[in-house]
Length: 196
Image (cartoon, rainbow, N blue to C red):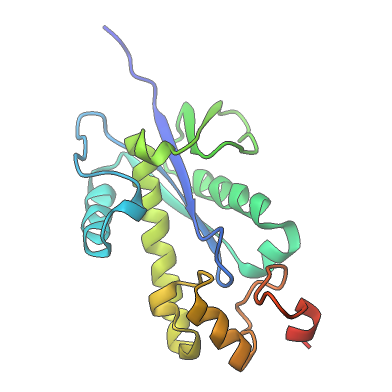
């Protein structure tokens, strides 16, 4: 009889944004309860992401979410912040996986747990797709809350990504306290000018 190893999928959301945190999730799915509709969260509508989020939370063996703030991103850079968010999510898992499946091509090893990096893993492994959905929906909630405080940037719609509208709002109103100072917020101005 084959014994299945306990695998945890990890993914993040918000790496390419100009504002807000980067959020990661770690998920251990129940192999006896596959979730047929899982796929990369970007390919799924917001309504269906929320439905899947609830299903994942109800049926997963374990899940957790890690958040790294925009201040930390500026301090350690976005790549390290993405790894840190994943580590924080793994730290919070109530059951520890025996193996980690990481979306992407790089990762800082997590002590005591071997891993494999998989490019476009969210389209290949259900546990990574589940992590993608939890990370995306949590980050969207955070940006929706920040939108209430800073509606001029329309984060409820763009979620902090560098849309033309978002950059136009930065040009018109300057950056908010939640913008990432080390990111190129505008193409034609230095960061020092923006944050003076």
